View 1: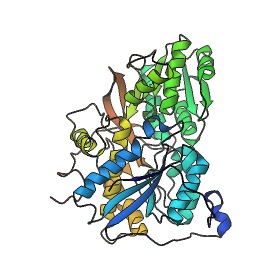
View 2: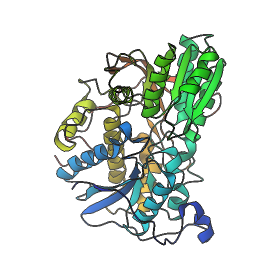
View 3: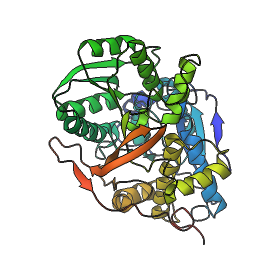
Length: 432
């Protein structure tokens, strides 16, 4: 069963606004746990349009493609998994209205893979007040990690503190003494990433922000150039990575470019460069040599059994879309949700799902290069990453895989365990 994509949902008159859940009374609230005998429905808010749409609009449909594959192979304890997708256009107000409607009127079991830091921050109070599972947020903000404060919200990808530490450590070791500039989105994810890089790299000489919806970042890059930075770190959405690359070209400025994982899918960025330049820039030339990181195998690793699985599912269930890092993200995140649903058992409730993640999540292995970190108090998800470089338009990973924590001064250590192969039928508990 395919997902339903809503172009919009009316806010209506709701019992409780996401920004004012506390005003509706103290303590947690509950609504009926909606589990049918044949279907489990999750809701999600995604940028199908707006500044975060390039690249990220592929994530939820790839997740549903994975669920469709699971459904065609018996589902999870006989239930099909279905995703209700709402286009929030990366607008926090629209995200809040959509999530409230999906919970109170569509009666979704939980929210899965809600995308974006500014958007999802608007819905976490509501979801936790109503004790609705808010699983595997598609954002690297550390704000999802505190299970004590938000017991129903879970991160998934490495948070930006962990990613910033690993990127910063690499810069410190391989570009010693060189001045560094940072361009970052002015939200919790970007701010945490900047702080982590500063902890590793003492020579950050300029840090400039942008707001989603801005149409240029040229002035920020000009200031970074004036500061003498030889390395520029982009903690950016893909659209702003492309704007950054074109600004560097216009400014005749050639620093080493370092981009966090969420902003450097080469296929997405190359397409944006072509579009933004009016066709003057083709191919991958401007991004070849850029440094990034990854916590999943590269889509170009055709011998990797996870990539082979995702390509098969992509061909059969996702209209044979190019296997970008965003498509891979959607399928890998969906795999983790299936793990959680299996662990929760056949008598599924919202609380049994939460208990399964808290009690078993840290032992789960799957497409990730590193372990997950889940407990009742720590909801942070993946624990590290591996460095990569764009070579001839492909993400090529190199060197050790690293893990670390968000604690100040905690070490960055090599993770040496091999990635396991997928289960025989591609997901946990598949019927042979």
